[in-house]
Image (cartoon, rainbow, N blue to C red; front, side, top):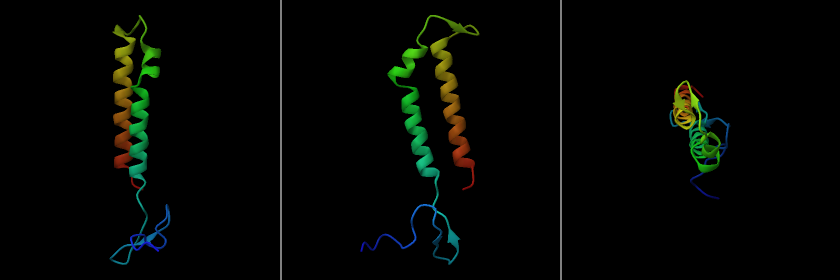
Length: 86
């Protein structure tokens, strides 16, 4: 048996901390990794091609508007993940 893995250290299972208190493993890491993958998807060719049209949105080219809206949404989602308590 591998000594680096503690019994009961599975996802969502409380683990005894060195001080004797029960803690839950953080889910922030997987959520931030998922947001990173979402960012890669949003700023990759197939999705960008959808917004690469000749037109404007409130006077701003659609592609530029998409960049700033998607970028802002990713920042807001990351802030929610980081600031939220588990």
